[in-house]
Structures are given as C-alpha cells and as structure tokens.
Length: 330
View (cartoon, rainbow, N blue to C red):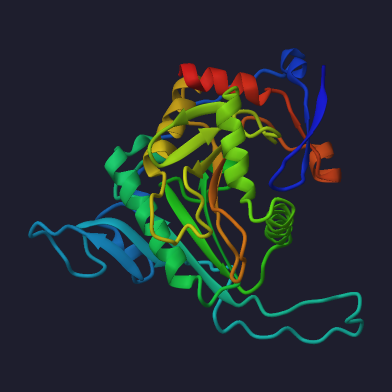
C-alpha cells in the first residue's frame, strides 16, 4: 500500500508507491553515456589553456611537471567560465515596488573542481585513489570559502539528464552570501532536536537507529554509513553520513570517500551503467551550532512531473527498503 513518509532531516514529504513501478511505461533503466571526445574536452590533461587560470591543483611530486596551468595534475580547480556568482557583482536597480519585488547582488564565488584528468563521465569510472583525491580537494575548497560565505554548496551533476553541460566528471562550488531556505530549515530541525533531547545530534541519532534496524543500510565502513533514506525522494537515492558526527565537511576527520565510491559502483552494477545523477554535500551553514554533514546522491531515473514541481511532494516508485536490499546484493 502507498504511504506518505516525512524526511526527519528536511521535513519534506514523499509518497512511497512501489506498485507504480509495474504500470505501463513505469520501468526503470539507464543507458551508457556517450564516450567523451578528447579533442573537444576542455578538462582533459593537456588542455589547461582551454580553462581560466587554475585556483588550486594537486600535482605530481615525482619529478613531473609542477608548473601551474600545465599537465601533471591530479585534481584541478578553476573559476567557472560562466559564473552564476561574482565577488564584485553590482547591486541591481531599485524597483518601484520593493515590498513585492526584491533583488540583491549575486555576490560570491563559483568554481569548478575537475575530479581527475581522465576523460570519463562519472566518478564511478575513476580509480578509488582518484576519487579519494577529488573528495579531499572538495574539502579544501569548502575550507577556503566557509569563513566568508554564509553557505558553501558543493555539487556534482553527472550527464546531461543530471544537468551537466560538460560530460567530463567535475564538481561545482557555490560560495553563497545567504543561507538557502532548505538549509535553514534543516538547521532549525537540528536545533529543535538538540533542545528536545538535551544535546542530541539529529543525524547521529538517525544513523544509530537506522543501523539498529538494518533494513535501509547499504554498507558500512570505518568512516561512514551508507543508506537508502527513509523518505527517499527518488528511486535508489543514497545518503552517506559519518560514523562520528561533525558539523562541517571542512572539519578534520574522515571524508567517507571510499564508501561513496562503493555506493556509486553499486548503482552502476545494479543498473548496468552509471546513471545520470546529482550529488551534493550538505554541510553546516556559518554560525550553526547543531548540525552534521552528509552526502546525498540522487540518481535521475525518473522525471520530475506535476506533483513534484507543483506542490513539492515527490512520488517514489521504489521503496527504500527494496532499494537498499538490491544495492546490498550488487
């Protein structure tokens, strides 16, 4: 029977209706990504002159090239060529009805993290060591901006269905001058839980209960726990949380990179190919006292339609308990 579930972290509601996956046209599948043309790929090693000058890079220390904006790098960070945020963005002209129409300067930073020199479309196609290096750079860029930005949002869009304009695997960093409403809402839920439980951490308590139940757990290692969230919004959604709670992803400690890689590989094995997806790091907004970072992975196997876009309620045709069991077996 269908049921409505409330996400304990966000408060968002999802209708879980597994039987709808059997309706005509309701099957889930994915196809392989088109191979990348190295000649037109601006992110491949050797094409450093096709991006803006790098802001940060991990480079070989074995006698290879160590000059900036040259080959020999492992992970590379450059400004976004078409930034959505700029540090010196001008204030917009005042409107004649400021109570109705509000606008302010889109100030901040917008960066691209090239996850590896290899011309592949997915993190799952990289070696484990490369993913670990990329996630380490994600942490460095969050650290770089967190003192000046109200919120730092790091995301990965894979394949055009996931919003990627370039196929080569990369992350984007948005250093925002404001705290987005959804993040603020989660901050409030963490604070309310801490007050109600005399200091408890909402995500840590959730992880403890999920591990006790086991039905939505996909995998666990020494650093993190990987699970299908209780109110998963999309089929095969994953959430990675640290074993020991920490407010900010930029704080010292494990990153969960190995388990993230394991989860992405499980998705690829289960579905036959790496699916289009969105991945992001939820980290503490500046000044938040009660919070815990996590990584959300959203495969894009179904379309967002009128229910999701009209009222903000997702319809998920794969129960998270079934998704977790299938991914455990993958």
